[in-house]
Image (cartoon, rainbow, N blue to C red; front, side, top):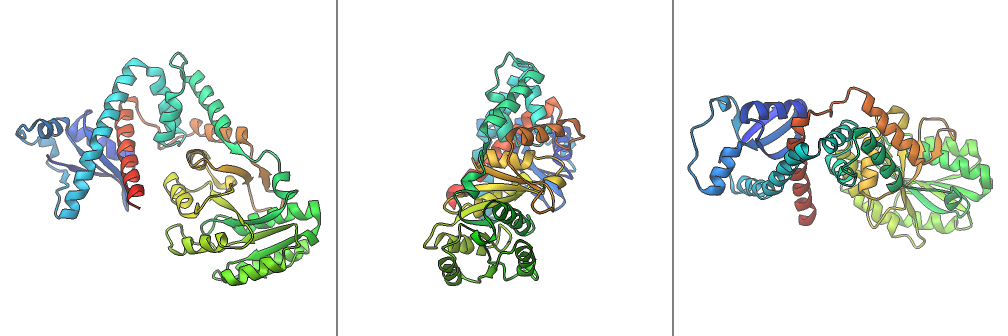
Length: 394
């Protein structure tokens, strides 16, 4: 069986090359991001069934003269190809199922297409579409999907749970998501309610130049002392010294979700004698793939909530909402700018979903044609299977 590699600047461009070379019934084997765009491995339906049936391969299609063959060069490459073939059954079933559903229920295909155009993942879009009654038209179905999303989002209903009850909260997340500014916003809300004497600020960021100074300036404005710690022992001592405080906010060091030190930092917060609740800051400007990695890296033994940041910079909120929903995270706050403390509000499910649905009216790079939906869903099935294999291997 010949496996052909197609590269495009976008998923749509790569899919177009697949359809042009292999036809509308091409079998998508894998879909991944590469440096110059998107790479898709695919084979023709005829080639696939010739392998399944044990029939000899037919002459090569002249349209494939310029495509590259992804031939295995080593045992490792062979294992990769075998994994792709194992995933192909699910992809084939998905592709055939959506090809049939497009004929049987064009409304559901239309709903799916609109959800994908808003930027939701194929996984979440499929789950929503499956649960929408077949008799609803596209607009009614989207209204139902909106209602379902609002109902599924878990939000902090009452700020008293944080500010009145107090405790120790650590804001965690990658570099640049706005942890320090968000810490200052939360600190200001606590000071306005309980006074500066009831609050303490701690920073574990001793790597970034000016990080401690930035929080110290916020602390001076609020009348709150800022303590700097560099390791678990120093953190234990600081928490013991500050145990009389109503609330302690910890601004943690930011690092890439792929940095091995993330696990060590999470372990430091988990190893304290008193419980430290972790709030994950998620940038609404990040892609779904990046946000997935962030959640998996920073989850540790569990998260107590998350805060959406940089909402004022994001074209759509579908990416971050998709990840929050699929990972079943509780949304506490949403940050919309740099002002302290004005640009921090309690999470509002209706407002967040409405923002995501506004993207439907814009020119979206994820607006697919009806004929492309089966291939898109098949590619997602392969990607999900690969992700599951990687998770089990880990």
